[in-house]
Amino acid sequence: MQRIYRINEKTRRVVCLSKVKLKRLSAISLIVLSFFLLSYFSAELILVWLSLPPFSPETEGKYAAFRLRVMSFVLWILPLCISLFLVGCLIFPQISARFSVEIRIFSLLVTVVGFVGSVILICLATVNHVSFLLAFIGASSLWITAILALFAFKRLNVKETH
Image 1: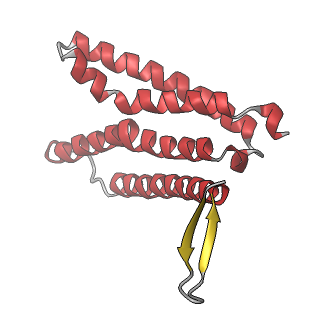
Image 2: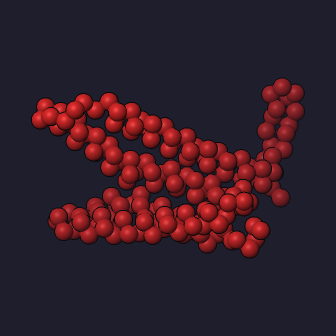
Image 3: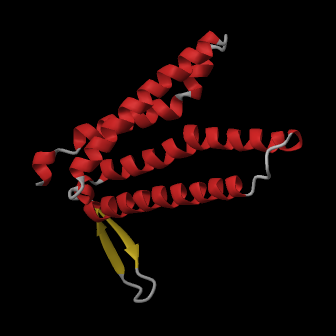
């Protein structure tokens, strides 16, 4: 077993961290980071929505900017948070052993939504005469999240955890 050493600042002693502890620590930090990012950007989106003035021709630009912010949340922020959560579950699957069935169902839904959303975005881009490569890169957040969800679905085995 490979060990990683660090120095404790209070006692000036060398502390050994095992690989398992590092995996657990990194998985917990990724899962906490994903929930923090999701809550922060959701609160920001809600605050922007609450601060919108009544709709009129003068405020139409603010509503267009809000719709763009919603699109960026759905297409980039949400897949990023889901990907961080799934990477945390993939690094140390024992951390999510209690909720393995729920995470498997969630990852299956994310896989289907990610691949279907990618296909829809790529088809809409090709219909509107956008380069296929550009559309493929634009939908990358969805298909990368779908691939991670597929790996999480395969890795979290219900028999091992119960």
